[in-house]
Amino acid sequence: MSKVSIIMGSKSDLPVAEKAIAILKKFDVQFDINVASAHRTPSRVEKLVVESDADVFIAIAGLSAALPGVIASFTVKPVIGVPVSGALNMDALLSVVQMPPGIPVAAVGLDRGDNAAVLAAEFMAITDECLRDKLLAYRKEQAEKVLSDSEKVVSEIFG
Ligand code: RP5
Image 1: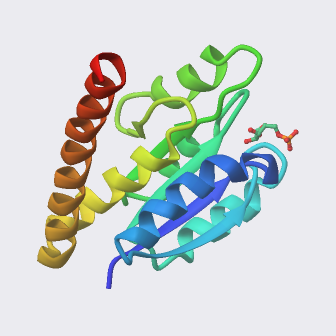
Image 2 (image 1 turned 180 degrees about the vertical axis):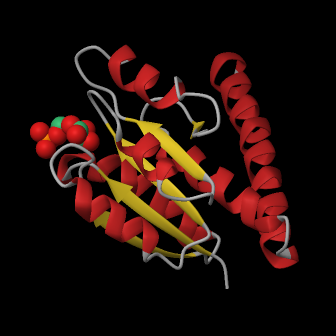
């Protein structure tokens, strides 16, 4: 069974992690979650990564967001980095995106824990047909919402 490990740099990142959790639960994907900081608890980050039985990591951090890159340095499993918004935003965004050659992190947008979980599910769906069907159903659900929103807007404006 596929599994995701969510690691966040601080408890204050929980609202972003909750977006990922909602998607993982929707797809019945197993996950664990921990707080571990690349700067404040580097040994804990290493231990969590090397001892993990997860297939994909979702790393959530703000400010000088070293966490996704540091996780990637300890594993060849895919790491999805979620920069957390703050006073500057570009600090976290660039810290997650600008990885040196050979140690990639798949970066999603600011606070996009939901997209991180969808991307993690897409990686795992390569070998999991049931998960692929759930992703396809989710795409359909989103398309239907756009159509129903369009109808609502038209009816609100024209009656
Ligand atoms: C980062 O610094 C954390 O990921 C968080 O986004 C930010 C602020 O951390 P706290 O001061 O809330 O612990 O390391």
